Length: 276
Picture 1: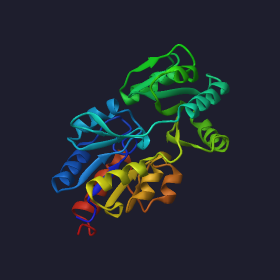
Picture 2: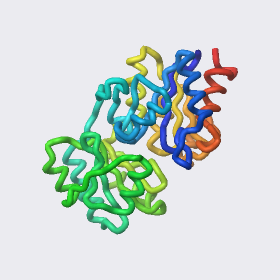
Picture 3: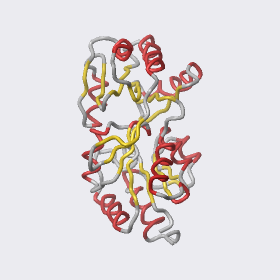
Picture 4: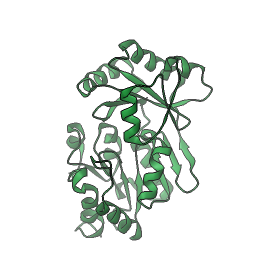
């Protein structure tokens, strides 16, 4: 098989707009794994949020979380690779967001596989409902909480109206040279230390598997997927992907609501001409 590993984003890629995984996709993933391929979810989600989905897909092995800042062993539920957000950078980023005003910009921070918010909020409630997770309220600004917390954060998220995202990303990249700002959803911008990304994580796993990144496929829909799409031998953008993702992809698949991932698996790994 030419492509020995597939690294696949979850939300907007495998996950459909109705928040389900189609049976066609489950069947394609199962067939690919049974044929000897490695299928790895690569997501920005918490491990606790993605673990049930790995079970629904029948996966074992590893899963990439936190935009590449963490890799977990699905069977043992233990983290086997991890990088943390520099605490001072996280505090500065949170202070920056808080100064913009909570009416338009709502920060979250992931620490110890738990989502933290300052207060209960309708934006937060919608976000955690989509992710099927709970969250902890700090009752003090997140910048203060992170500064005092003994444990390090892995990433910061900001919830906002979709029309504000591009401007926020552009300004954030200018104001913080060491941080990466990227959209992961129509109303979510994620902030991590520059250099930590899904591309680095799939390179680490390919080395662990003893295969070349040229033997891997990466599939995604959002700007946080660009690094891994560029890293893999075949970079695939979903039909519903953001424009910047489509611009750098080698191939544009069908949409998440039309079994795009399943079609890629059959075309390039199981039944297609490139299956050698």
